[in-house]
Image 1 (tube, rainbow, N blue to C red):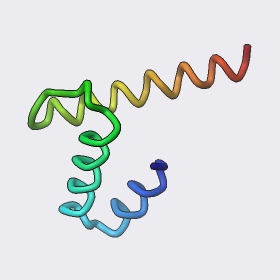
Image 2: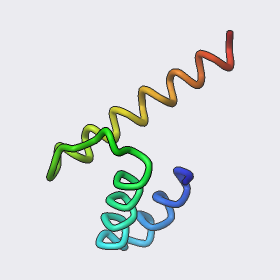
Image 3: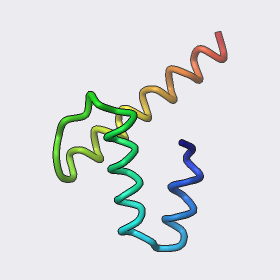
Image 4: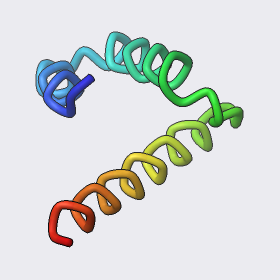
Length: 61
């Protein structure tokens, strides 16, 4: 799954489809996220930001 998948759907203002893709991605690839509602997406974003930062540090070192 790439950021571009979400960016394209968002740019097309397909918000229902965007939510479906986010929910699918969380369910399939982030089983540790068990929160609901808006908190689920906030937890997902935090998880992605942390993983991306960790990846960037590993690339530099």
